[in-house]
Length: 414
Image (cartoon, rainbow, N blue to C red):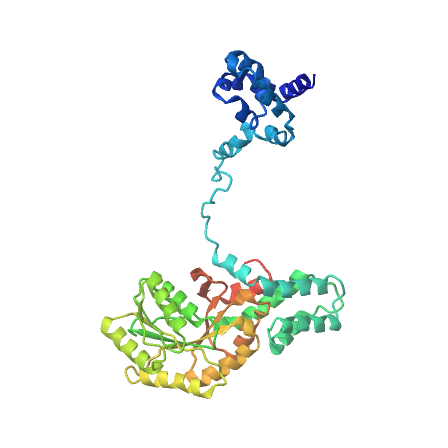
């Protein structure tokens, strides 16, 4: 009776395999294989019927194997299902990500005005938010003017410029409501008036061949990158360009200039690290003259304006080049980092005395909320501002225009 119950239980569990295993029982030795297969009790009757009389006594050992508990096999049986084994195969046809993440077609490049306003966003937001908060919450009076002056000073426009703007805004407007946009309009006009005299393009004289540009500035101001951008600009105009890797203290600067030379198609003159910068400048000038190069741009090592020895080296570079060309360099551009704030005024003064700076390039205006320093520089030094940079791209260095800068920094439309 117990044997029938066990058989019934096993048939319920393995009923679907009964037909499949039946035909193979004749090939399996009765006693040894019964221990390894839970299906032996199910196929026992056919095995006894086909076995010769001599082996009729052997079914009892097979019956004894029925005492082997099937429990160890029960957890495994449901898991051996074909669908799970095929699951990875069903996932393989799915990798079609291209339509889900299409590469956008390149759009129309941003205009210079768009790049300028984006680059000056931090400065214009600082000034504009302060003006809006100030002139929408209270009546225009002396206290309001004082707070406006503080806002402009914090943007590095300088004390003199801030006082000039507040004075212009205060005329005829006391004790009455004033719109923030009206204040921004006055601010833009006053800034433009200061910048117009210094907004001068750098003219490459056709009768100066090569036209020599000497780049100077402190460490990290962006001289080498600016040189690369200028090279790209002049090459786009169809001019031949030579770059002199005069920053012989820093091997990375030489390699960086070589990369720019490759990108722009400019010739690069370089020497070993530690070579004499003045001698390199002289050799580059000689090579540029021999090859009829249009523009020669000479890089120099970054140096702090308070280092007398390094500043004297700049004087030597100028002196040596003038042995070959009495008018060289034809332009000495001081590259100023806008993020240095008021320290830029000191740099302009010292480099002006040492290297005879003829014009300014202001970089990294997109990295500060104090872009007003350019206004303070123009107001105090009167040096021409040739280019400004508002980003890392080649197109982010452009000739300086007073009106665009004034309206962008005030947060007004073009």
